[in-house]
Image (cartoon, rainbow, N blue to C red; front, side, top):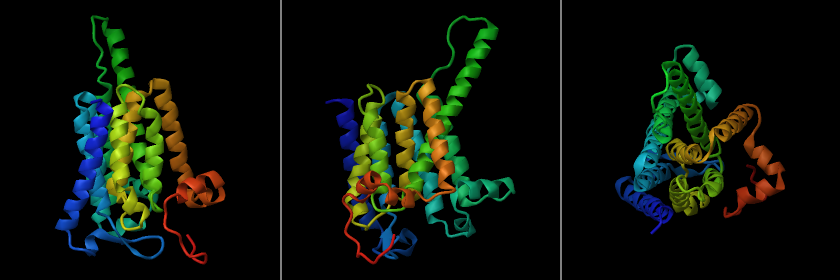
Length: 292
């Protein structure tokens, strides 16, 4: 059985079983795990930890340093995202990356700021494990030093790509199924890569395991699920992409993140027929007079 099949089955099955287990452990309508969606209706956050469990299991099933990198990235995204999900403090008033970074610059650590720092740190660790390119050989001190600096730069770019992808998927978790669909679409070209393929397959399967309830507006990924899902897709991209492409992908992620501070992705999608068709696929119909 191929690594992609093993990782995919593991991610999908563990994600589905974890969701059932959480249903048994958490009372229905528990306020701590309930939020209000765009229709003003209650929706559960339990999807996030369940998907994260599937993602972590899929990464472990991949084995080796690639699996370890994926597991670290998922753990960071899930853990720090969950802290932000379950917090009820004033940090919720500071939306967006700019708001949290601004608070950090003023010496104020919000739960969102903690998430930024925590996911940034675990993403760097995941990148270092994934690249595993410590200079070898008997080169001179100068060349070895230059190689080490190059490696550190590679890790920094790769870590930023993992963290940025985690954040970007989270930014899309505003409508039913949107974040899962975006992550799955991003993972599709990575599945064919011989090394990154199992990670991408695991991410797709774990996300897909939650899609029916997400589209049915019963669940949402929340920060824990969206950050974990984006982090695993980002790790797969780091493993699959050569250095120039990693830099280009990071530039794209940064550009979209900056754009999100100024424009509404929901409005852009609504104005673009192809994006709107993908975005609305599988959702329950809303009354004609009900806005977004």
